[in-house]
Image (tube, rainbow, N blue to C red; front, top):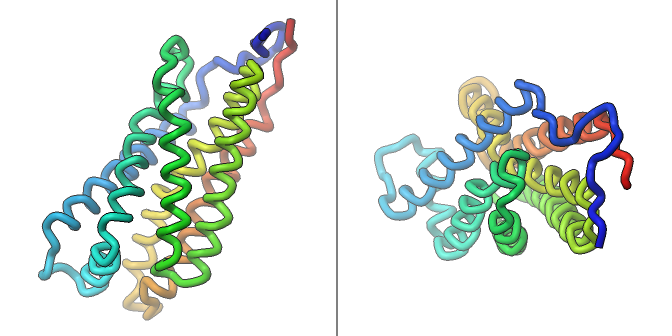
Length: 221
């Protein structure tokens, strides 16, 4: 089957993304990796001397440790593979993309299960249900376009899936603001976690949508 390859367009879809977007991607990558490693360490070595709010959060995740591990380990592997499918220089490598789809499916299914005991209640749960469904939908569209050999559309939807997943990293600085101002606002994690989820994931989705829609679809042979 013929691939939908970029020919005869004024904008090459393989061209490098702007510096600010690449910087945001690597920052999200670093935060996501740090969050997972920190959670794995906390599960293995629970702390009793940290801030009360953090200790309470650790206890929530420790109460369903197996599910947490089943979610964050595939997510960590997914994150490690994203540079191989995002940057055109690795386009010849097929195995990272092939692994990304089953890993994404595991991450999505376990995210639904994790949302049952959402720290932020229904506000957080609604954010997880919406953006996780968006993640799985984007991943499915990317896979269907891959099967059809429509390269350009596959890449666009795969980019959407990757950026939505990395939205969990964007929520962390937002949560940090809420934690830092909790003395003034008197908000607890149960009150602001859901808001932070909606803000963080929305930022990532809006940014990638604006960028993708600003790029021209290439003509095909």
